[in-house]
Image: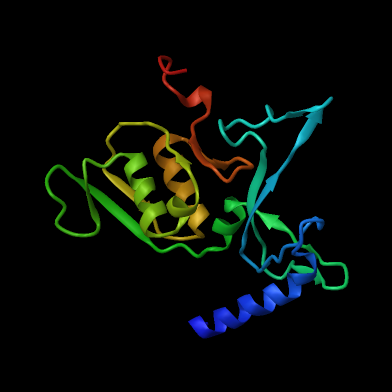
Length: 200
């Protein structure tokens, strides 16, 4: 869409909203909803006359309830009432739809000679490489890695979806799983029974 088209669109929207553009009007807005759009669900609760926002786990974003993206072919718009219905899916669902690209890494103590080598590789480094360069997970989610500094010799994930590949490396190298919370954050988590006694 060119600049002239955008200007025409802005003018059409302004003309559409003109009847509500006055001081005694509650106002109006136009939203664009499409498959794959990011959705953030907010919540405002009141206790008596004061607003209560102490239910979220993240400082500064306590009123956020969940994050997700509109799943394909679930969007139903009712132009008569100005409503939209859709299904929201989190990162786990999207990763399970993304075909994985084969990855086979080996560690090296020196400077890597090619794309298939990683200097002083750990499971977290291999997982980061998979999430950053073979999917977009590291770009769209906060990822909380295991914190393990144990060196590994190889990291191989040759088949399955992007989620399957992440799970394969997490399980093979850390006995861990990739988990997601309702805020779209990813966690590489090892069960307590599989951790050494000290960090439990």
